[in-house]
Amino acid sequence: MARSSMNRGFAAGGLGLAAALFIGANSFPDRAADAARYIFFLAGMLAVLSLVLFFQNAPASDPEVTWIRSPRNFAITLVFLFIYGAVTPYIGFFPASALFIAALAPALGFRRPLLILTAALLVLGFVYIIFVYFLGVPVPMGIWRD
Image (cartoon, rainbow, N blue to C red; front, side, top):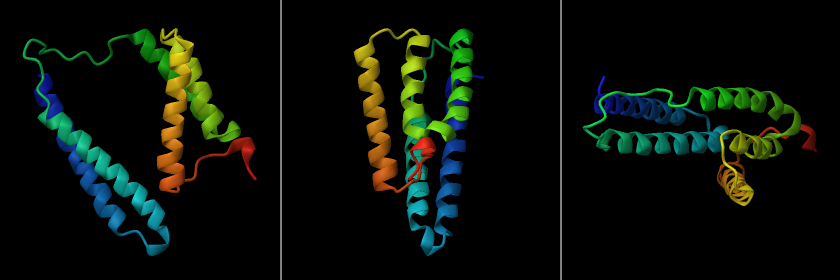
């Protein structure tokens, strides 16, 4: 299947999912206003990214689609994701995420510690500000519970 056709198909699916999320969040009760706002945010981001994918021009010289370009990196990432998912409830979202980023980056070949640290702080800061502070999404606290 050509890349442009596949992109448009996935984009259409993403737009359909965004519409379903939006319609579903409209039926949330008033007591779940924060949760509904979070779902609206996700639906909006999904719709915007799907539209970008839909209108993206695929290069004509690349008709073949390679699903996994580096099987080794893919396998490493899967292993780290399973470990991350298993550890998060115990040590909390933010410590687990910091360890995940700090361990996965070198495993995938990134060797600049200052860049890895900066990226981790920016990502975790963004997650805290948008999801925890603004949207009020609870994250697993693990050992840091009150």
